[in-house]
Length: 257
Image 1: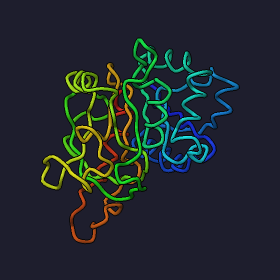
Image 2: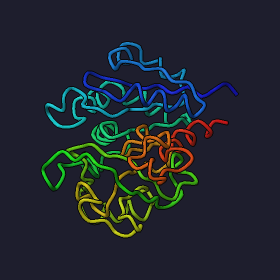
Image 3: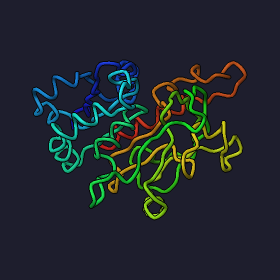
Image 4: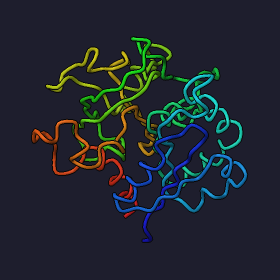
């Protein structure tokens, strides 16, 4: 089939769209950066793509809350478009601010019957912006983007990344369904405390997927570790043959092979 195409949706304040487009191209796909206003004006643009990605950054300056404005625009103007996109068997990825948008729009985890979201991304427990590298481990085999990945080492850079479910029952249900697919660990792969878990997330959750495994959001930045030289200690021989984040994009492209 034709080379899979990724729509990289950007908004005012997005600043990782170029790197994310490059990641999909490096993985063997095509990528086009599309401004949110263009998609709002021409929703049928999405039909020409197999992957939709919401990259990292600070959409609308995070002036209300991280991802809240774009999430609201999607919820009120593009919800049907994205639902059709997902129902067609396509993929959606949200990175950092994109993860925040996916949760606030209800696309990743649909609202409960009472109209409230099952989970959100709240302020880091430290109440500070955190910028560091973290160890990660995958859980379950539901998520398409994490196929054949056991662990990763990726950077995080956020102030609102603490995964918090609305209650204990919801958290347990998501865990049982293998939707809490990516979690922070310490260097040995064990349970992480601060700073290995940079935000205090419940169960150390760094990423979550929907019930199909085809919609995935994560706080770490895979597009910032594509090449071995991106590793902060590559000169000491600690990097692999490729950057840990590349496999996520390769999995998305190869899904349509």
